[in-house]
Image (cartoon, rainbow, N blue to C red; front, side, top):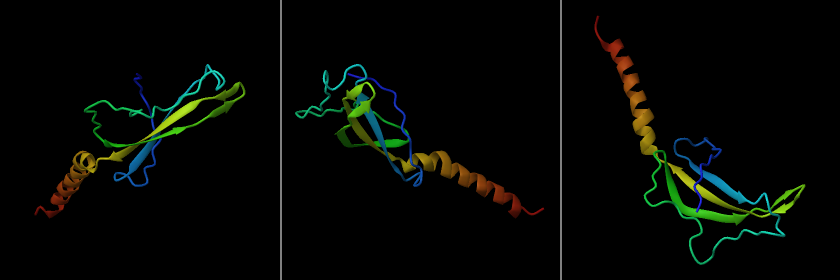
Length: 117
């Protein structure tokens, strides 16, 4: 069992209606592929997310892409496995946190032009 804190570079071209793909790689730095090889479990779900996990800005999709990523360094060939998580941004969060307050500020600023002096 692992507990991780991860970061993910994001492509914000379609913000706030974007879907991000974040990759997590697990790699052995101490043992080469002659000594250790990582493999995904076939008979059960290999990657499990905590029950009831919620993210305020994203929906974590159920689909996860599992793969292998062998790494080559000066010291040898190392085993590596990777999982790709798909995060869908929640539009409602940005409506409440950004768009509606910004719209209200603009409307309030226009009101000053409509007031008779």
